[in-house]
Image 1: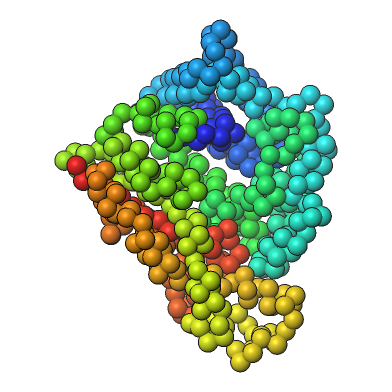
Image 2: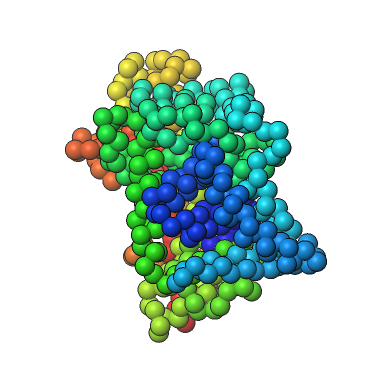
Length: 427
């Protein structure tokens, strides 16, 4: 695992170390959930960080104290058949200690004030209202509570134990590091979350998420407890990774959206990552996975947008089949632009539109396939790991489950423009 952001690498390392040092799996799962997602944690959670994890980091910092700040240094911890290797610059090793210590003077009450100054800021009230417009009434209540308190717990769970600011979020006494729209629900399949039982509280969406994450983590920890497994974490720019990893050693590489135009781009990503895949003679199924989050928006023309917005466009006709008219009649938009139904209708357009033509034009306009072939890679026309458009609606209006699928997409953290590509090594 790699990220150039220390916050991400540090939190990943801490959660993996909890998984490796806490013997009781159910205890480890609950500790990880709250370190991962809750703004306040229990005293027992903080004790694990300070008494079990911090000494491991302090030992490394003591040994490397004479090194220059920019030197890249690695440490491997072994726990039976399992190991974790962490590679950081010396300055980052020193900073890692702050992720396990609550800043002096920071109380739970002050931490809540700092956080809600971001999540409930008056300047973003319009954003929150638009977000809530797309939710069911019960989910609006749950979202408001999460914005207010920042605890990932079932709605009816007791909160009194959660009195310690989570130091993996609060490294300073005056800053909440997340954006106001950061939502743990956006990192998981909303369909799988909604299908998770939360007992009698059937509409407790964050309770469902809590139980879903708990189940996934428990399966993961049970799996790795009986395996010989090695985790490696780096804090590097992606372009530096080949200098630290062995060529031809990976069966699968997922690079998030660094192939987007605003980051490394397609040719550079392919050139860096494909040589790390196993050769076809060893593993013909070795796959590089790239995500394009911005390609559709960056390559849509005004003509594309206007064609979709006309009253008789396929997108508009399809949308009317999902959203009740409520005064928005197919023969004419008669409501004011500020009317919530008009706003919801406008926000929902991307959910029912198709963008193949935009992405295909983007890919054709730049010789990505030709460049990839020169670098020993080819596009996998038939995906084997993830669908090309995994968040696109799959059911037609009127089919069983179609309305529920639409409502999930509209209320979630994706929009349907996300496009994945899979690549294989050809030599």
